[in-house]
Length: 169
Image 1: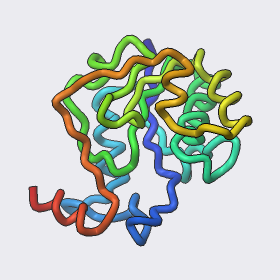
Image 2: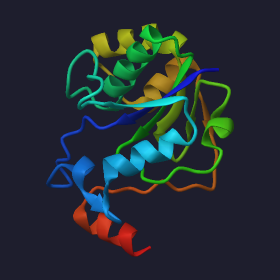
Image 3: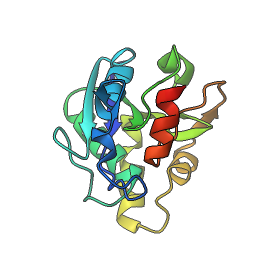
Image 4: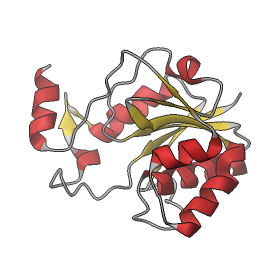
């Protein structure tokens, strides 16, 4: 299966107080860390919500808008599935792709870290056009995605204090 990695970076960083993607951890931006983390388990990596690919159908749709943008981009380029992670997920578990296959799946502790088949795009478009429930878990239920348990606990960086704690760990 040809897998596109997608860093979801279209959020406004309201709780963080500044552009979270550009925050520095160990001399590199969180965006650079997230891209590197996905690169190790995907055939190619894009950034959604800034630069590479736009959220679909528009900005401010939350993670599902980013996932939709990534799925559209992947479908147009011959990928079979998309592995998503948020911009503040600077570390991913070893063997993530193998852990999540076969799609559709997501990490139980962080549903934005998921493996989504291109075939699920039509259902996602319906959800986004309806706009009534834009939770990643609602999308996962709709397409029959299974939650995957893992000992991995993704970093949760919502403030500069969270970033400081991560830098000290």
